[in-house]
Amino acid sequence: MAGVRGAFAAVAVLAAVALAACTMTDTKEDDMNSDATSQLWEAVEATDADAAARAIDAGADIEARGEQDRTPLVAATKHEDVETARVLLHAGADPNAQDAIQDSAFLYAGAQGLDDIVELTLEHGADVTSTNRFGGTALIPASERAHLSTMRILIDAGVPLDHVNRLGWTALHEAIVLGDGGPDHLSAVRLLLDAGADPELPDGDGTSPRELASGRGYSKIVAAIDAATDE
Image (cartoon, rainbow, N blue to C red; front, side, top):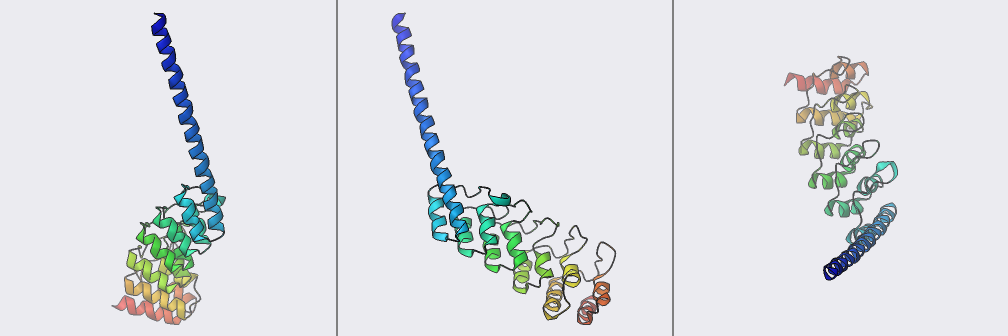
């Protein structure tokens, strides 16, 4: 019996040693990953794509959350850093992850007219139906700001044309209401209409796009809407 008890004791000691070794290994790996993640954040802030790639290779958490709950990809996008965004997306970063104010890399890039990042996020699975804090798609602020090339990318990608945000506006409404009626916003309106946006869909107050344009004295936009309605 003494021999059996001794054997059990030896096994228990070996198990404890093995567990301690595993714990130490896990702790070491966690520390290494934490250091790599810190290095990734430093690289993002420095807009250093090469350093970001090295940090990722060292085990950095590409979905870590930082200031305002931003991921490294969202932070890189807000720095307008195309190359670091490219590195992160190629490493598997989520283009739909949103920060504290509901900006994702895709939504922010669309709103700001950052075409290269918009295209990169679309290549890596951006959700074209995703919405921002106003309940709007990427196309709505792009239209408001008349980012024409961005609008074309988003339209071609299948972003819904007639999505209504929490303000009761579509992309067409915002191009009129928040635009200046000038050449760029006229082009934005024409682009939306040519793509199939509904020229008669009223806003949340029941006002049609034509009435919105007419009330602001945007005669060329009124004419564009009339031409689309007559087709």
